[in-house]
Length: 603
Image (tube, rainbow, N blue to C red; front, side, top):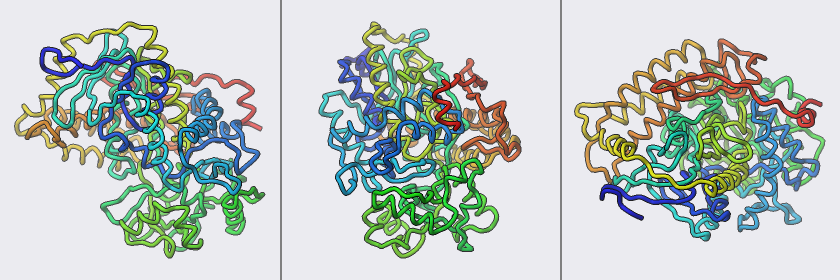
């Protein structure tokens, strides 16, 4: 460590990883193993990443329960779930390598639920044609983080906790590091690096109702955009069908899809099991036609055996289930507090408590509901953004030299809609690949020094909120942003709403320039929110402008004024890039899929 001009710390590494969730930890482990000097930066404490909130499982075609499962069927499910807008090479790599990454995690000490003969147990999930989610009850993400964190710490990499990154350092077309500040003191810190890996997660805090943690403020998306990298498919924001709706203090908190995977039934206030009415025509044959058929399917899988019965309608893809619930509520068939009912109380209480321990405790402690004796009230909650930094499938390299990305901050893998469980295997597969790619790049280049002007500008930006008087309150601005996104850029969209949202976002961006904060820099939540707001405003504008451009409905993007898919958009990614101070939105064509892969999807 050194100090430049006695104003800030400087740290130097071959590879700097920003974000310490599953993708960041896996990238850091791999880069360190490749011989690189690695620095790992996180906004909070190590182990507090949003990945711990992932509950249902990690998707991989291990074929431990469904012996006819394979990477080919996993690839097919992923592509169909993403409405064929996925980067096919990413979907192929993911399906082929996910089993090895899960077994690797097991070798590193991860504890999974087991079949009767001792293999990793797998459960069904929405959009998957086979039960393929390896899990630890409903606490899979926590076990993943525990395992990866132990491995990372044992490798000896440098960890920088409670550090917010506000700007990527560049030299011409190349990223050469990052600038941030310590949340504990407010002091500026500079990281010099030959390669930078973004693993910062999603954008959920831009919405009022979200399952995401406080860390998900679109930091990596915005950092990449401002550094000149391209973002793709930002219009595709997934609303998880099942978040808590009551009491208000926990509204949006995730209710894992594992509840439905273990047999949970969705009903409206008329006691109607409504999901049968909303099944997509092209995949209707995959779903059960009666309660008894659906129950046979769930029971067989619970016992680790196969059956000819088809899966329950509740396990349709997330975009479809979210739209169905939204429609039921809008048409007056919702629950008391504006959701619908999810019921698993018909199963033996001891089975529910064993299979879903976190859900049992969550509803008992937070809502006063015993899920073994009565239904849960649930509704859609902003959960995941499919769009992100455009990356190379093989290496995780972005369109900006020296910048890599993995996990939710990276776009392409999930297309127009992500299947449940694919996020955790995505973290493992592409975290590992980004680590390899960044370390290999770092070996080929020399370190570079940031310019004094860029450092001075960063220091001025950090100090600016304290210099404003009678300016904008950051909390009020955040509330206005969330209200705008929730009401105008939510599950259903129209051109009129999106144009209004873009106009309001411009007004909010102008207000951001006058944000006023007071007090010391150390542990100052208003000051911290200021920089997160900048990132959320960039991401929100990218979502709204991309959604306005895509004049069709596809996956998680639903336009009331364009309700059907448009063949003209079937092979186009939306592309967001920076043009001076303006945001430019265009599109690019998907690469052609090889014939042998297309045959897997079209019988």
